[in-house]
Length: 137
Image (cartoon, rainbow, N blue to C red):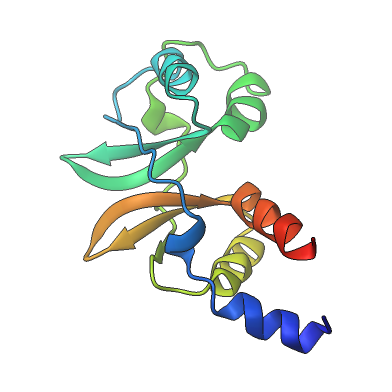
């Protein structure tokens, strides 16, 4: 399949088709230790941070290495001090190519997926890689 046909084929795949709907959220005052336990228990690599029940940010497994460990934050640090704000989102009905472009331009690996102004899932660079690995076969 040539590049043009591959791009045309991929443009038809929507974010909703590859997103994960396993979402865990936490209050901004939740400690980074509690966040790590939530990630472990839920088998997820990101937690949505909600203030007054509104999704405002995200904390990822990568944040633990880049921000928390390298800066030697104590485990009782509230997540709002290390989470990424604002929450980067994409509509569930967007093409995965739009998601890939957004991730690339923002230098991020995870996007919250929204539908009717509500976070309904998360799409990750791993979701995109797994899809491309299947497309190649």
